Length: 306
Image (cartoon, rainbow, N blue to C red; front, side, top):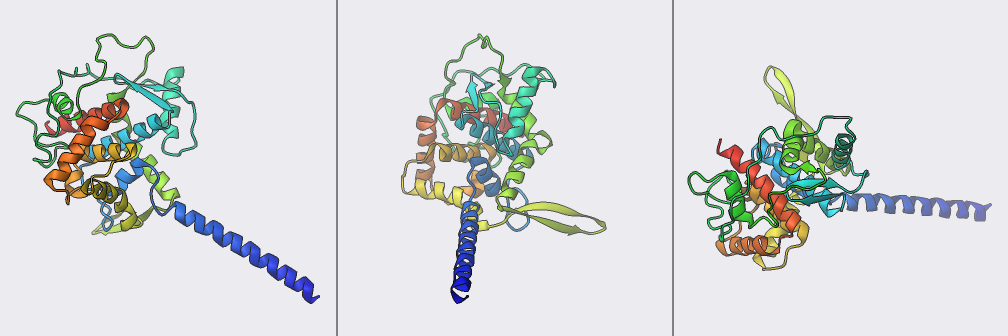
């Protein structure tokens, strides 16, 4: 009998041990965000009141670009000359699945396609200077543009020449990048998907803020202020030590710049650090990332100059 009880006790102890190890694994996985768009959302929000550090429009465009970057990096989309081409039908990711589903529905003709409301601005010839005065002016992702400079010209000056500019479009119709940036940022479509993903990972918490004679305001806050700041802090540390940034870090840094979040997230960088980042973005961005960053910079810049 004693031997039987000992065996049962040992089995129970092993079961509990495996359960605890599994729980520890879950906690470790959710300790920090795993996606660059999650990083951007967390870096943009105050961990005390939940308010964003940049305008809703700028953040929405940035989050939209981040989701599209994730799809491109995951080889679920291709980006060529301002158009997106779907390569995979489905994904299990809660933030990315609606994007692919909508594109598939458009291609099947079951929903109206996201179309440009006006003729897209053409990209003028590129300037040799990039980030010349970054960050000279709050509200602009890359510094103060010369008077009368359009958002399109400002983006070319910052991100470098657009590869393969041609008048002819693809024989196969794609999804317009600028229109999809707007579509995903409208009605907080991109942000809702990112919040859902962060919630499932335990990285955000819901807070009701009481208001006098009105219904409480619902806000999502980063669950851990240290974990939320880590991605931007890692980029800052890498720049200060002149370390090479990974592809996703370069994209995140570019989104932080284009949305104007650098005044908060990169506040400790000195002029030499900024110059190092400027050079890295100018020389090491791959073509899809450069095109995404240029597009979001155009969208944010033109909205800021209205």
